[in-house]
Length: 215
Image 1 (cartoon, rainbow, N blue to C red):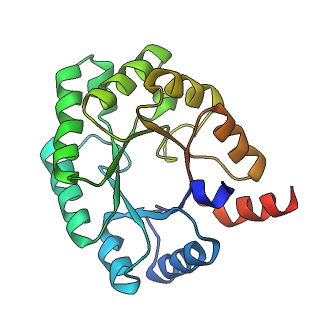
Image 2: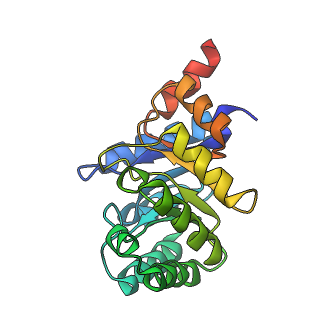
């Protein structure tokens, strides 16, 4: 499998503009990336622009601290607008409080709202210790998510190969692992894949593909 097959081509900045979204879609089509990953307000625009492109919408992004009802509704709306995959952010504070029932319900409600679409759970590894990383991976598995994902890319750090390896060890072959945040080069992308990632999120996707061509 070539590197482009792993990549969700990503633009999540608060000041992202329509012309940048259009460029993102064109690049994704040209380089055959797995999907485009955007904030939910852009999903319908992209779907109207292109009927075939795969769209990932983030939900509860980037803090994850909004109500479960709000996250579930955002997921429902994103799917109605044409999203194929949902990347939701957990409530980190509730996890640290060991309020596991809350976390489990939070994911389950978004899972329900997402129906049969792929659901990825962003665990924000840079804010967690290893015990918490293992626990949220287990809860994501119990809630029947499809992937666990390292990072939003908007917190104190992004993906690290050690975290990817721990997540893969915890979920085994039952869930996918998405590495996201701070992946800018082909070498960094390969490092994440070798650690156990089977999906990558990056805004530097074109540079990564060009790096593969020159490897």
